[in-house]
Image (tube, rainbow, N blue to C red; front, side):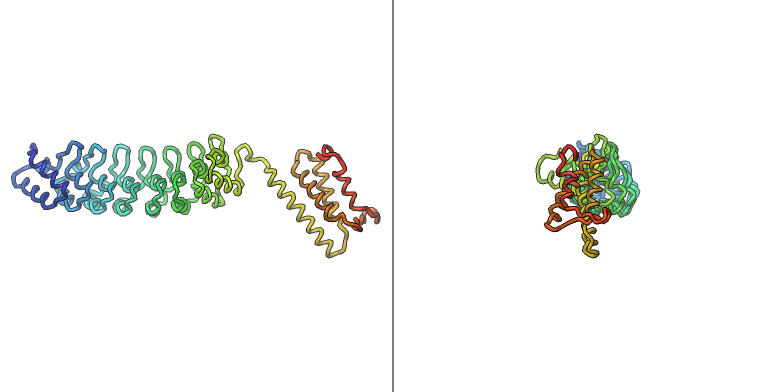
Length: 394
């Protein structure tokens, strides 16, 4: 039955005005006059919107309640030109009361998606509508696993935007969504470190720390992403986890340090490089190689420890410092035999000069017990290297 234009226009006008009394009167008149309520329900504007859609989008809860009885699921699921049905647009706009009215009649609407496979839950989550999210999950929590055509869940995008309370609510309902990857191979953690809310990152890692070193399809970990996006606080937070792979190499043969070198100069770059360096980060070309600076520090530290031990022993037993000389001679021989290890050579030279300065005082001698009591002045240390050419030492 064709719908009289006057009834059509009057109904839409009343709905847009959120005039519940007028809507009630129009529906009663239509029914009394034999006008098809089904035809009235199916009527659409030029934008493809039904009266129910208009009321749902506006959040007119009372009007929605009046209109729902004249709709069946098929008419209620009609999409506008924006590719949304009435329930979906209500969820997107955050109209909790309207959402509950729909769910009370058709709970299956929770899993009805648009052409990009975007669910009403997703649309509510990415708008930070927590009450709507909870209402949908209370009705059907399985829709939390719905992924869009790009592979992203509602958790992915909520984490990227930084909606901590949404992320927390989703994880509490189903922790199993945390490691889900999108079509790029990225988890919600990859998305979260692109943003600025560190609470979201902590929430994700508290739920499943195994995602810390997960790589996307390009081999990037969350640390790679955070560095590339110039997120110093994210980098610092990730580095606080002991299980983080600081020197993970991606598909482009880059570590986080390589990416940090590409960051435009500024405060963020300096902070990121400083924290990466403190954590032992390296460029990809140096991964697996000995860090000469660190090796030098360790060698000098070992020498200092050994010398202190000899001095302590000397103070207790009144022995001369023969042990120190032998230790230095041993280090010197090792350095000469291994000319490639320049670190040990440098450390030995430093130690030699330092010990000569400390012990080469008038009246200080070495007691060489092994040679039967011969007395050698400490100046014999000079025979190790200082009197030789640098090329001989090297």
